[in-house]
Structures are given as structure tokens and as C-alpha cells.
Image (cartoon, rainbow, N blue to C red):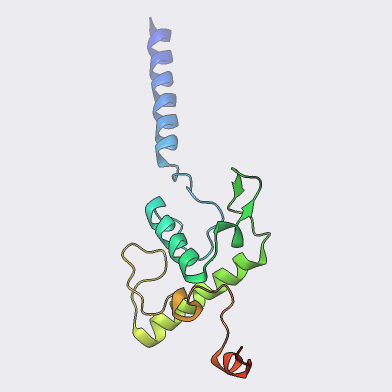
Length: 140
């Protein structure tokens, strides 16, 4: 009977430790390879941000993200250079908003309040032209 009690106590302690370790693990990230947007961004917020980017630049998801086939994507891939440019632009917008408009939020944060957005310069174009470039072009 002594051995049964010892086995029961040891087994109980082992189970307690295992459950404790499992409970203390951080939750797995939903989205992989987020370098500028918040790591804990909600699915609803990331969808909203990506929709804003699409409309502001007049592009679809495959402009920055790697489409493997008609139904599969590798959203975490950094293969497309446009994704790197997008990250730099997000950082630039966040900096302008913070430095000149005293914004306390950034792209991807819940209920972000920003003055400068992608559409501010892009106006639905993936590569906006500067005013001087537009003036130099002959009108047709």
C-alpha cells in the first residue's frame, strides 16, 4: 500500500508540472513574419489594414504576397521586393504621424487614428508620380 501512495503522489506531481508548463507557454502567433505590424494583431484588424493598403495602391494581395497557386498563398514569404518596400512605407507613415501629428497609434493597432495614410500619396496608384513628373509630361 505504501508503494501505491508513493506512485500516486509522484504521478500527481508529474501531471501537475506538465500542466503548469503547458499553461505557461505563450500562445502560437496567428500570423508569421510580422516585422512592422503588431505581433498580437487581430484577424479583423489585419484584414482591415490589408484592405486599406489594397485600395490605397489599387493593387491585389499578390502585389506584396506570394501566390503559390489559385488557392494557396505564402503570406509570410519575403520573396517579393514590394513587401520590403511596404514595410519601409509603413515605418515612414508611422514616423510622420508621430513626429508631425503627435499620433499615439500606429498602423495595425486597434482603432488607430492616423493623419497620413498610404492613400495620402498613392491615390490608388502603386507607384505615385511626383507633381514635377506629372507637369513635365506632355498632355495628350
